Structure formats: C-alpha cells, structure tokens
Image (cartoon, rainbow over all chains, first blue to last red; front, side):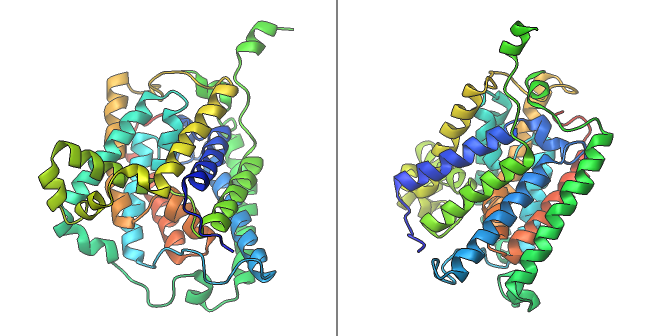
Length: 196
Length: 176
C-alpha cells in the first residue's frame, strides 16, 4: 500500500465523503467560514487541525506497522515563496468572497448562488494566471527550501516529536479558541446559517 | 412543545471534534487508496483549459500553461474531476437530508445581493490566481500537504490565515 488507485470509483468515494463531512461541519456557509477570521467561530481551525493530526498520526502508525510503504505519499515540494504568495491570495479571497475552492463546491451544492459566482471567479483567476504565465512563472518556484520537503527533515527532529507538537497545538486551539468564541456569543449554528 | 418550528429547523452541524476526526479519517483513506490527498483546484484548472478550448481554441492551445492540459482531453478523464463531482454529491446529500439546502445568495447581512455577488466573484478571482501560484489550495496544500508534514503545507496555512485575518479587517462587510 498505497494502492495508487486513481480511478473513477475512488475519486467519487473520497470526494463524496469529503463533501458530506464538510457540509455537516457547516463549511458550506460563507458566514461560518469567514467568522474564523473575525475570531467569533473557531470551527475552521478546530476541524482542520483535528483532521491534520488524525491523518498524520494515521499515516505514521500505518507506516510504523509496515502496512504503508515509506516515502510513497505525495508531499508538496517546498517552494516556500510560492505557497506563501498563493496561500496569502487564497486567504484574502476567502475573507472577501466567503469560500476557498473546495468549500465553494460545498456551498453551491447546499443552494448558494454566491458560491457559484466564487467558482466563476476561480475560473477567471485561472485564466488570468495562464494569460500572465510568462510574468508569474518564476513565482511558482519561488523560495525553494533545500532543507527537505517535510518538517522532520527540514528541522532534523524525529517524526513523533513533530506529531506530539501538532497534537499540543490542536489541544490549545480547542481550549483558547473555545474561550474566545464564547466571548462572541458562541459559534454560528445551523439555524443561524440558514437565516439571511 | 412547538412541533412546527422543530420540523422546520435544520439539523445541527456536527461538533468540530467529530467533524475533524471524520475529515481526518477520510483524508487517511484517500492517502491509502491513491497515494495523495484531497484537492479541489486541480479540477478548476482542467475546467479552465476545457472551457477555454471551447471558447477560444487557438489562444488556449497556444497558452504555455493551459495548452498541455488541453492535450489531456476532457476534464472528465482525471481523478480530481471525479473527486470534485463526489464532493458536490456528498454536500448535496448532507445538506438535503439535514434540511439545510436552500437556494439563495448567502452572506448578505451587511451587503446588498449584487454587492455580495461581486465580492464573491472577486474573492474567487484572487483564490483562483493564488491556487495556481501555490500549485494547490486549502485542501491540496493546506490540509493534505500538512498531513504529510510537508513544510509547504505549514507555510501555506500561515500565509493563508495571516492574509485572511488582515483582509477581513481591511474589507468590512464580507459575508456574515
């Protein structure tokens, strides 16, 4: 393992479960999603960090047990300038538009027209990028880190130590975030997300 | 007992802990099945190439970035397209069954409908451009990249949240 199955069925299955979980988390709602940036609802941080810790720990355990082959997972290359520029643009687009690319699909399929417009914007942004590719190509490989693509390699610390630190961060997010969002009157619930 | 309002009320969202654990397990399943994580913008890039090819074939074909994707043929031929179709079906099943599906322009609390629509379009434009620079989005680099402990994922998340915090302070009246 991994099976390296890139067929129709595995795509539909993984996607269906992804969309089902995101909608149930409330991540079709642009109000709930952007409330993270206003600090009044910490669900985005909580869900993302929990998911990252669960998946990272799962990969670690499956590899340690010899079930999953080492170094077979796709790790994004460490073009740190490129991901910083792109990440900042996506974060700004998220705050202004209400979605990120994945959650805009969830928003559209819970009936939101604004999510469709966000998707049209995504297409436009892709065309804009392609049209100015000669100018921006060097951004896509900016800031290459020679230290290694993963945090354990780059920092020279064992994987279990990185995982332990991430679990500690996740717990802190739940404790501190929970306190801050209570001051704002608690996270946005499903009924509030249905109101205009 | 107010049964009428109970029947109309949407089912509550999952708690963040439950949703986070479920999302983590789905991501783990995806890694085990395919060797890579979940994504979204790979589909929009293929859709941009395909739709560009329909509207302006020569310009798209000659474009250094989109041209090679046109050679791949239809957007339906790739895993990421099926995955995004899956996301759509999953979100529809979840919102419909929980009474949370409603056709509307959402997030118009502080903006009129047309203004909110323009902001959604602008936000998509920024995110679409940014996703091509980063070669991925919140799902592909932020979530999946970080789960493999990729340095790129952590840097992405830092920049994503810093810019989001800043933009939501500078631009008043985003969706709320």
